[in-house]
Every structure is written in structure tokens, then in C-alpha cells.
Image (cartoon, rainbow, N blue to C red; front, side):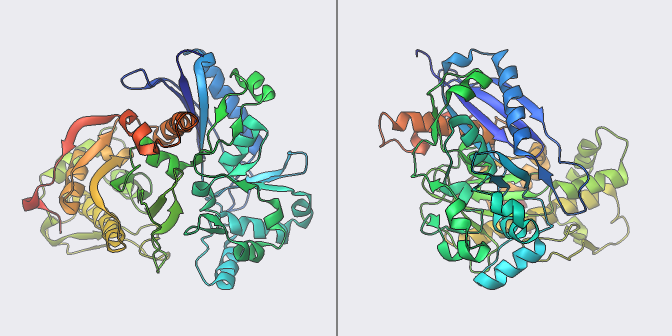
Length: 473
């Protein structure tokens, strides 16, 4: 084939993104494209659905855009990242039975609570299990028509290859998976529905290809028929690969609307209180993950309160906050304005205490908010460490990572150096890198994902080093 390129796709909630990775280039990414997605309209509060066929249509549009930038005939492998926890129901011909309920659909809360009671462990409402139980209960005819239950990235793999499979990383977010054993949990499957086990596809072995691009998919996308399709994984699993968390000790913290912290481990990490999600990674290990509900949504609230019409409001707030001493003169901001997942306080509210004259100045409130968010995220990291997770390096991603004050605050609090990955689409890059690893594995199965991919994760030359004297309390 000559020069080999790799395609990474990320099927998210808001868009499908794609990039082409060339291992012969310094930066690696030679083309990128995106296509927006919307939720289906007309559903009651709490429901969130998309049609899987719309994902595939967006994939075809992304490939058309990429074809205008690079030669798709050079693509030697494909990897797919997908939003986790969604429910795809197919009939015996492979056609979609009904739209997919997504990770953010909370209309299945009753089913999640009942499964939690049945199994004696937490089954979050966002996980796939409650959505299957909901379908069997509320749409019995559709459930009877359902021959196959897939996750979003599994569905794209199916459309690419004609084969239905799952892999441990994404499957560990279903609610019917034994994370420690890296296999399906038959007891949990029966609790969801007695017929579920017969509708779930086979589980891939680590490093096994999901299939090869079919003639029909190749024709629709402009790819070469027969090239390998990697197992792919959930977006967190692919983002771990795309941001360099492919060895123990490298921790990724994402400062987005919500905040996440995850890292790869060689052994499962089980939190007895269920605060750290015990996911598997998509490269043969595990991916303990912390998710807090309050992160840049809090800083956005402050921006809207003080400078709603200023396009440079966040920079202005950061400059003001930088002039405020750590600790904010006793002002403390508990940032749980949307309730909180960790700690488990879903009905909590935000609180500001310690206000004295001058305490409501925007710089004080903004710094206090950053300190509060940081304290919550870092307490989650401390919990991970108590559970045996190594932390010797931190990769910071997400919109909040652009804030230099916040970056330094996190480095000081955790007392670890911070580096910044240069590629903003870490999930799509991770999918492409996984594809390159899988293709290399066909030649030598001894190559680890870290050995194959880590050198292709570009990071900024800037390193944020902790300052012990200014550590946040």
C-alpha cells in the first residue's frame, strides 16, 4: 500500500469528528473534519435521544470533508471512539428498531434505582442497563423486535464491517459487565432482562480487530475495502490513548462543563463507595475515572453574573483573580451549583462563606470558585491515590486548561508537574492511534499500546511545575 495513514472517528453527542493520522509527520494529524449532531426534538424533560442512522450519515459527511484534504486510499486502518452508555437496538436484519437513548437521558431513573436494589451495587441512570430495562417495560413490542443490543461505537463498527462486537472498555459502562474479570456478568444481565444475554454480541479479545471494512462501507466512505477496523472504545478510553495515559502514573484531568480525571492502571481499581468508576481501558488494562458535575459551568455562571457582554470576560476575571492572595482572605466557594456526583450530593447547592468587606469583588469570587473546583477535583485524585493509583504526571485538557492561573493552582495542589497535550481532539486521535497499534499487532503482538502510540501524542514544550510555597489549601 505504500505510505500508511490511520483514520480516527469520534461519534459524540454534539458532533462526529474525524482526523487522519500520518506516523511519518512530526505532529501526525494531516487532516481533520467535523459534522454537528442534534438531539431529536419533542421529548419530555429528562429524555435525550438520537437516531443511530444520523451518526452514520454524519460519518459519511466527515469522510467527504477529509477526502478533500488528503488521499483516503492511503488509510491502512480505522478506529472509532463513541459516546459511552448509549443504547442501540437492532432487529434481526440489522436495522435500527428505535432511536438510541443516550448517556444524558435520565428518564430511566426508576429502572436504575430498581436495578441498584436488585444487584446490591450502584447502577447509574446514565448506564445502558437502565435503558434496556426501560425498553422492555415500556415498549415491549420494540424489545421483542430487538435481536441485537449495541453501544454507539459498536454500531459504527458494525456499519463499517458488517460484524457485531463489543470490547471491554466501552462494555464496562453498561452496568452488566464484570470489570475485574473483564467479561459479561450473567447475573446482572438477567437482572436487566432475561433475554439480554442472547442479544449482546461477542466480546473481543484485547488487540483483536473488530473486522474489516466491507465493500458497501468502502463504497459509501471512499475507503479501501478490507482494511482493518480496530476494536475502538468509549470516548474516555480513546481520550486516554490520545492524551498519553497509556501507562500507570500518567493522569489526565479534563476541565470541561463537568470535570473528569482518569488514568490507566495494570490492575482493577474498585472503590467500595462507588465514587470512582471502575472502567476497563481499551488496551488491556483498567481506567478508573472520577467525574464531578461542577467545573467550567461554575466559571461560566460567574462570567455571566459579572461581565455577560464582555468577550474577554474570562481573561479579565483571571487577571483580577491573579491579584488575589491564595485563600481569598477567608472567602470559600463550595461549587455544587448543579448538585454533585462526587461527593454523592445530588441535591446540594453552591455556597459562599467568609464574606467580609470587598469579598464580593469579581476577582475574589472567581479565585474562590477556582479554588473550590480544584479542591473537589483534587480530593478525587487523593481518593484514587488511597485506592492505590499512582500519580506522577498530569496531562491537563479541556477548555479550562487554557487558564494559566488554574493550571498553576492544580499543579500546586497536587504537587505534580503538568503538561498540555497539543491535540484538542484526543478521542479521535486515540482512535487513530489504537488503529495503528492494532495494525502493528498483526505484525508483532508483543508491542504494547504505550510503546506504539505514546511518542505520537504531541505535548506542549511548556511544563507547569508545582510551587510548594504557594500550594492551595
